[in-house]
Length: 42
Image (cartoon, rainbow, N blue to C red; front, side):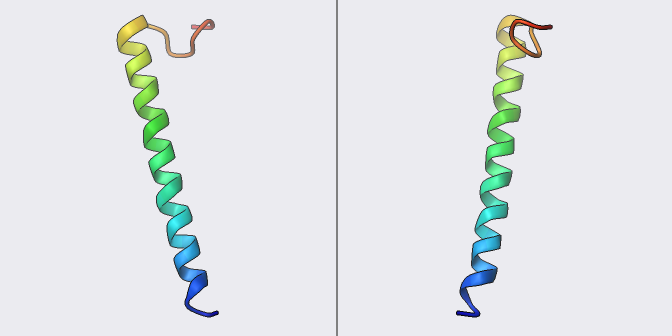
């Protein structure tokens, strides 16, 4: 039981980092293609 907890938080942090990079990539692609930072607002 002790071993599973550090592995859970490590996987959560890795997943969080990957999702943040996917969001950042989507922001950059949207800005390059359309020139908008937030679609429909800026």
